[in-house]
Image 1 (cartoon, rainbow, N blue to C red):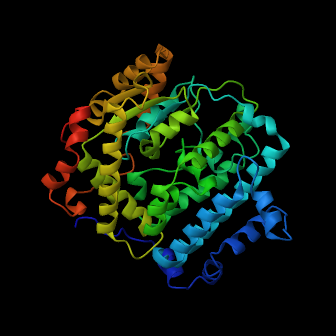
Image 2: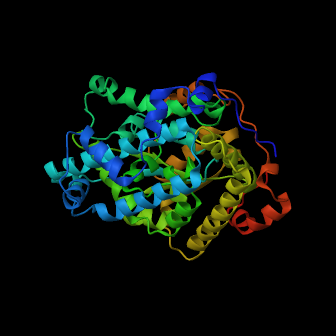
Length: 428
């Protein structure tokens, strides 16, 4: 095994040893639905007299609370029984869940006060939907740098209510940016090395899964924590609720801005492409591919480091086995969907990570050509500027090894041979 737990600052060790009383006391508060919902509501100046009133406030005819609360209950049970959170991990998790519940309440209130928001048309959104560690983040950053595009910034997806101002100055000074910054940067200060793997921040383009979390149907809940029972439950679920919530959040963000050319990103879309196209029939999807052996080794390292920020008990082998199982199934389904014609081929663009590394602008130009989007000199200049601002290993090198996957490389490659053959993916 090459992955080892990164160092933690002295202040984190002190908190986890119980030496910082206020944080420890807050961390010991119950992680139950009743306690979290009551506190989230109180933070919004609300008190509910009974369960029916609570469900009515956190739900809507089109977004009922019961399925979301059932998922939340399952997730909280898995947290308590399986995740083995540290004090600071429990404290961060509690604050994260309170924010999600507060914003869900705000979303439902906003929807009741402005029902026309659901009439906002999301035209031909462009999704980056490759597997993790296939260059999706930098590809997303390049697409977001194009002035004709709008990518949701992290603060927008974390706190979309009220809709952000269309005035550029007010948008850039929104106080929610600072709130998002503190939430997203905190795990990067708890362990060393995380920022070298994936950089977070309030004004960075953000993945779609943060919008799906308001339905409690999101891999944001399974990436940070060892919750295998909830992970299995989520994988078996129909993901329509997550995508309907995602669409509502985009509609909220678009309100008052006029027609918007959205660019969006998350590897989770790879698992549910038919549902994505059902929700957004005119979507365009960029699918970068990479040698599965390499991407899974890199992903295992990322998830292990992310979980180490929340727990002392990180099982690298369990993480690797989960990813091997999940992506073997997903890549097989992708081949099946392709061969069965279940995906609109004209709305998909396939590329290879190796080609993107060697010639990023040419790869992006090909995506534009495939989807009949103009690629001007202004576009090229904006993308070059974004590349210059995001050099490889900007925050240090990310080291990882296929040895951490726990199986011989040849055995792993055999599980993905059909996928690599179908899409012409070379071994790295």
